[in-house]
Image (cartoon, rainbow over all chains, first blue to last red; front, side, top):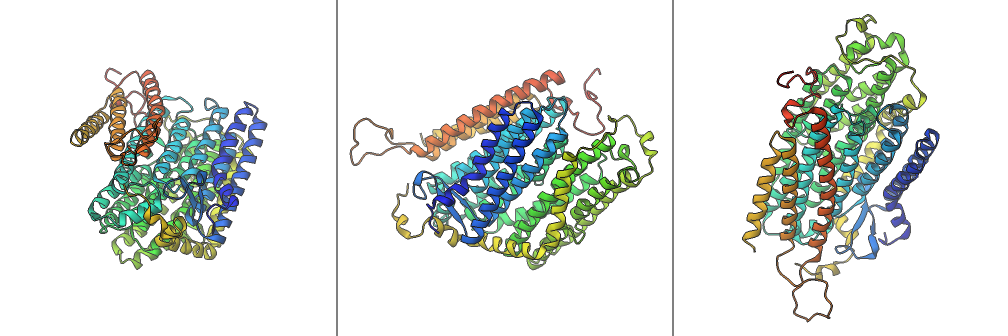
Length: 516
Length: 124
């Protein structure tokens, strides 16, 4: 695979360029609803096409690399996509595209659509860059772009609740960024390079493996904050329910998984060696994340808060899958990310539909929606069962893979925890179903003073994206065979570090390169 | 320099973290600024603390030791990003303080369930 292939370079820039162009175009659309919709739709389709193209290239050629400005590998900035990057790009394109459509129908009042859409596109562009970069400093810069765009999205309405959620979100995430920057500074001081593959080679040659573990621990805390792992998750349930449901859906669907992606990337390429200490920490943190998230969810009455706690709980599954440190574990993590991004976004979209149809996010105020709107009940129950891990939906595929990997790694305590957390998830979903959908209608009258709007008609742009993602969740369940063989190949590719280095440094000539 | 820089970086990071742990919203902002200065100096130290300026007028002699320009490029980037983030933080703190009418974040808990607006505020 020639690294400077013009076609490959073009493909790799698309996930950044398309959303940036869409952001500019949507600014020109001004306040015209139809133009905004058209531009967002075109941008979403183009971005999806770009992601599919990269996926096709990666499946055909293996890892694809582009050197910006034709500077050779350790000196210039490299962009590369492997199977994991391609999957994440695809997921970001799906959530970004459907999210833009959903928000056009969902945003009203103080959240101005003409401010929301450009910020959303900037966030998607940030993710595009984050998933294809092969350089640690670039990694930080793209993450910061995602964060800054997300800050803007979070305070868009300017209500006190949003500002308050935003300051919790902001303080913790900025601390995470500072830790990531510190990691990069120390890595650079140790290895004198920023390229992932080059770092991997040089760190291996160092005499002090414990120093590498210590830096890895700082990186782990940074990524732990961003992916909402125990005990660093509390900013998430405190802030995610505050902004508009469109913002919550996009954040909840994809933002924390960006942290998980970063963790996988750093652990497989930059910090693979070490004495297994980091893995132990990740396993324990993952177990506690699962438990604390689901216990928090069980206590909630507000649909958005409940789903936010489930985000935390599901992050735990991915963490333990990564911590198993086996091919099966990484395969499970990939399957789980695929499942959770689609399912979680679908659930948040559906909760937006529920709010529109019933006038409230409060479970008891929603009461009895099944008798009034059976179609919405159906839209909810499919991703809810999927989240709980009931076959044949996507959640079953993800959870089964995690549990199989756990048995393979002989982590029986964590496997038991995962099963119990699955049951509690089912309990929590059953509670939503009973209170919001099955309970008799009179419950509405008994609700204490919670802000309730009048029930309204649900426009197609609101339920359309929800239906699309629900269908996606079912599809992942039915296509489990091909998808899990894809995930196996992804895991093998992630663990093949020699192969990764070879893409960047095809011959050992670079060994003569200057060592600082 | 090699002994001064780590102490300076450590002191700035410690002061920044201490301020970020306070309840006062403005202290969190100042803490963020100081913390990011500490981290930027850490990058500066990572590049090595000796050498001539890398951009020069005259062609340089063979044995000349040149400072690492990459570390300086990184600090420059992170200072610029930091400026943007800090201005956002300042406006966020300002809007929050104006709408909540207090600097004490412990009294601002509208996002917690079961806490009606302003419940924790002394005197109603």
